[in-house]
Image 1 (cartoon, rainbow, N blue to C red):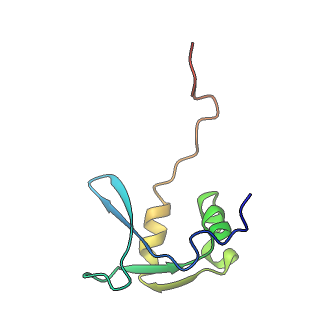
Image 2 (spheres, one colour):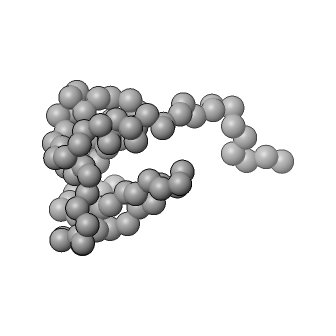
Image 3 (cartoon, one colour):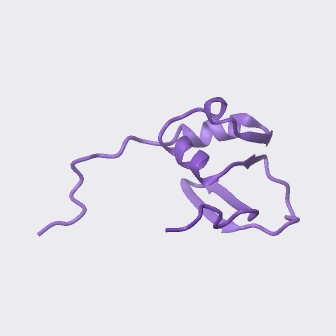
Length: 87
């Protein structure tokens, strides 16, 4: 089990285009500025994914906060009965 610091200080860029969300590690100085920069720890990211709010998690944002709300608005509740393994 890790100490929770894996990835500390790294930068990642998410892009949503044509219904596809892509992810890549970002350079320290990207060529194009992001519409929103979010600074958070893994536990805060997990909190966002399960429905906690930015305010509840005390997440630092810089830019247009509506972009995060829009991205999180695409989440759907997982189907608990989805057959991951079938005979």
